[in-house]
Image (cartoon, rainbow, N blue to C red):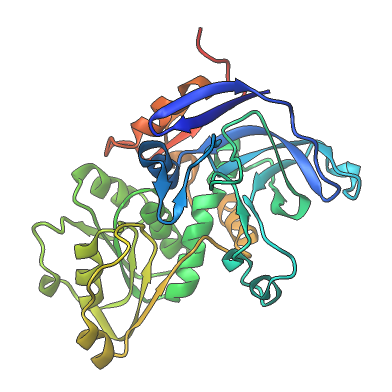
Length: 339
């Protein structure tokens, strides 16, 4: 098979690799679509993300879906031919985190496209059978891949306690911010206010569920109403600080965007208002909800796709994310390659 491999920062190569053989509890998936995520872009441009450092060739891409074409010895062969969305993680079954249901926090996790585990910018991948989630025919290949960022949004909504009638501020109108706005709309949130410095992304947010948008460079926090929940999907320190200042007493802030490793916070405000500040690290037990939302038309995933690429265009797909008009680029590994 063909794989698109990061061999050095800013350098992607096509390589020929053996098609993987599924372990007893795994399935082999013919990959049909892979979304480009911001973490892929960080690894591509800088060779690292947080504490993760790319020190050997790595296949990027963790937002993926496809069709099961083979199964391991412990998996029902009736699954061959199923269209699936891939939850791209393999936790340890015996860790304390997994046993209490927080398997996303397992310190021994093997996760697609994180150094040590290849991702899905290749024609075939293996995954444990229970993380290959069957999807109905009404869900497209692109949407199957985008269940992953939608799952981040669902995990965020659970942490922020989105409920009907609440007022929510979301800073950052990239893919996760837009997915979070859509989940907020599906959950009955009454006011969904989204900020972004890019006018194009603010316009996109209005199309995907935001009830209002604003430019944070021209609107001060004291011009905003109080919010029940604040979600930062930008990773920008000023956005985090200003968002926290808009929360009502006992409000909740959920930090999703990845930016600086450390920032200063308004501790007195947090203490005096008894604010709850938490983070989101991937997701756990979100795929059934994601599939249901997509299958019933409560979120729009296909509409988020702004460009498609083949395996030999992965570098262009990664570079495309610098354009504020690009919402989600998708790689189709079996699409005919150039030349």
